[in-house]
Length: 336
Image (cartoon, rainbow, N blue to C red):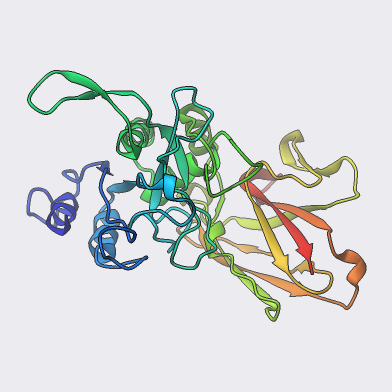
């Protein structure tokens, strides 16, 4: 496997060229901590995967087929949680495109017993597949779901050949059709991929907030969030827009959009705090690559009446002459 990733990073053996690097690597394999004697979050393959993606090849992994055993059943390396898309693990839905298949491995990741997994879903039930020895047959497994996502990556790369590995995977993640429990969950992740919506996400030069890097404890006063806007948003200013439960109808966003109160379409985060939370000073400028590690300051005055409050927020860039609404959105709920 490591040799395969090394080949993907440089197929022609000439490190001075990059036009030989494949657009995507589809991985229908993994080691189960339940049965293969490997630790959860085993990092053996991480360096070679990172090198492969640094060269420009999108890597996607099947989540695993141990869902019948319950939660925390993802295989490794698909259980990795370095960022919201690394590893981008793929679960399986039935042919109805709506319900999770029983075998599809469930989250959360066994690394921290918290981070939701898998990331996205595709059909893995009764999929027409090439047969060893010739001909075709119908097969089921997350190994059948993962190639659907690889094909989606190929389509997006054909439309946006300059898109980065992160941008393509994030577009699929944040445009997915929500299934199961509202928001991100440990059965469906963010939901079933929607290639057209992912295309529109990239077309609109979306500003992406890396949600998996959001880590909050009751003692924190700052949260770091990586923003990725790409070269189209280089040097632009950005700002946070928000809404608090009880306000109506929400916060108007540039372009006539409204951030609804308690928006939970994409994902939900819970702040485990004993009092109220205020977001402040959450603005700045993206760098020459269109990226920024933004700092979210948290002020927590002793006011338990704010427990249960939900705060919804999104980001926009502020080019000259107006605003662009260009990000995914979150709900944050304040709980005891």
